[in-house]
Image (cartoon, rainbow over all chains, first blue to last red):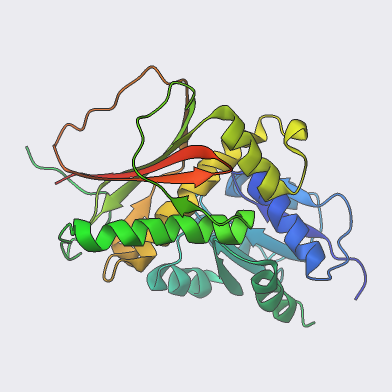
Length: 127
Length: 167
């Protein structure tokens, strides 16, 4: 696979950096810069002018949370093919079910190891 | 006055506070976050008087069938070291990220803790973290309640993780 254009959506800039580092540790060849957004609304704005191959999103964010973000991504024809993987502390069974039913392709609970990121992200990219 | 919980499921079961079993769960939740995200093993220590240099506090609210606040408090230097360990960079290169890192650690501890409480999981929501800078303040619960305070040694600096639950 050629370079992967990734977007990381999290209100924590520290967590965005950790997720990016974990993706690179998983062996993904990410194109730089990785797109970053602090909430779902900001992410939707960035997606309007940027093509991406993979989105990793927190759930618990201000302005627009991750579940609403996934729901809105699925309503846009040109975006719904992009795999979205949730990375969140909201790791209850009902949250997982809700995220997957809205269209998320994977779910990683914080705290997470780089191996867990690899385990959940590579399959959704068909790797 | 009737208190309305923001969680939409009114059938959420009540949860009985159990200090004896919840204290080790809070300690385990905290240690796991530090083990996994900072590659640092925390040791619990005897409770210490909070020091004036404990300048940074991160708060995360819990609402649902348990309601309250989880807080983590430490010195500016300890927060800087936490961020450096999370980001894999020298402490002197960490700037405002130390506040962000502390908030995210509080968020992960709260999430990890509620995940360990049988039957609580999806009946409890977390707020986004709030950061307080400074030590000249005190908190007062308006409803009374139960408090668990745990203290750790982090890089030879004290770290307090407190869970304050409303009745």
